[in-house]
Amino acid sequence: MLQAIAELGYRPNAVARSLRRQRTSILGLIIPDIINPYFAQVAQGIEAAAFERNFTVVFCHTNYNLHQELTYIDHLFVERAAGIVWIPATSDPTPAQKLMQYGIPTVVVDREIEKISFPSVMADNFRGGYMATEYLISLGHERIGCIVRPVKLSHSQDRLQGYLAALKAHELPVDERLIASGGYRLENGYQAMQKLLDVHPSPTAVFTYNDIMAIGAMRALKEKGIVVPQDFSVVGFDDIPEAAYSCPALTTIRQEKYEMGAQSVALLQRLINGEKFDVCLLYTSPSPRDS
Image 1 (cartoon, helix red, strand yellow):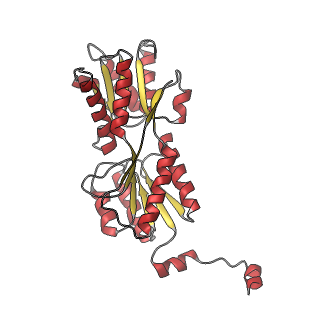
Image 2 (tube, rainbow, N blue to C red; image 1 turned 30 degrees about the vertical axis):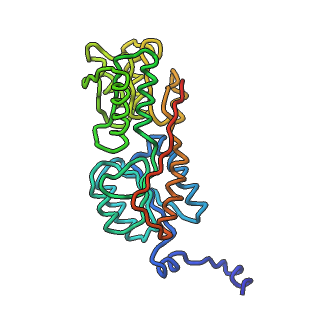
Image 3 (cartoon, rainbow, N blue to C red; image 1 turned 135 degrees about the horizontal axis):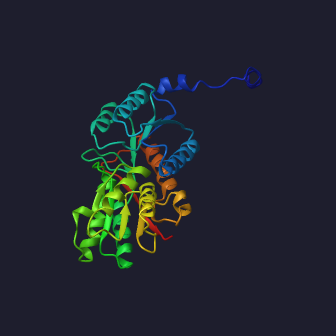
C-alpha cells in the first residue's frame, strides 16, 4: 500500500479534510500597508510562526481601504479560514462587527478594538510616546512638536497621550499648534513638518507617529537648512531597518515587530483550539534606540 501511494505521488487532500472539520489550515493576514517596513517585519514573524504550526498564510493587503478590508473578511469566511491575524486599516467598527458575526477566531496586532474583546498583541504605545518625549526634554527642549495620525486608532492616540503626559510631568505647557496630523507615509511626515515650522515660535524638536514620517520630516528640515541633530532633534517610533541608515541615523523607539507577529499566531492557535478569552492584551515593551 505505502509503495503504491509513493509511486502514484498521492498527497492528502487538505480541502476535503477541512470540509469534514469545517475549516482549512489557512490563516488570513489582513494588513494595511506593504510599503511600510514595520508591517513587513510583523508579517515575517506571523509567517514563520504559522509555518511552524502547519498553517498556510493568505496575505490580504487593504491599502488602508475599508471596502477592501471588508471584502477580504468575506473572502476568508467563504474559504473557511481557520483564523485571522488582523491589523485594522481604519477606526471604523464595521470590520470588527463582521468578524464577530462570522465567528472567525481573530487576533489583532498593534491595535485595541474599542468595545469588542478581540485578543490583541501590541507595544505599550503610551509608554513609548512618553519615553520619546522625555528623551527630548532631557536634551533641553521645551517646545516639542508631535506628528500623529488623524484617525482615532488606539495606538496612535496612546502615543499622543504619552507625549502629553510627559509634557505635563515636566511642567511644560501644551501648545496645540505643535500637534500636527498627517497620514502614515514619507510625504505626510514631510508636509506635517512644514506646517510645524510655520508656527511661531517654532519647535526645536519633534516626536513622530512612526519612523517613515520621521524620515519625511527630516527631509523638510533639510530643505529649510535646519541641521539634525545639531539644530533640531527628531525621534521616531518603530525602529525599522531604514532608521539606522537615514542621514543622520534616526533616534527611535524600538518595537519588537517580529516577536509581536509570532506571539499573535501563538495566541490565535489557542483560540482555534477552543480557548476563551474575555480580554487578552499582550504588551511588548518598547525601548529607545539612540542614533
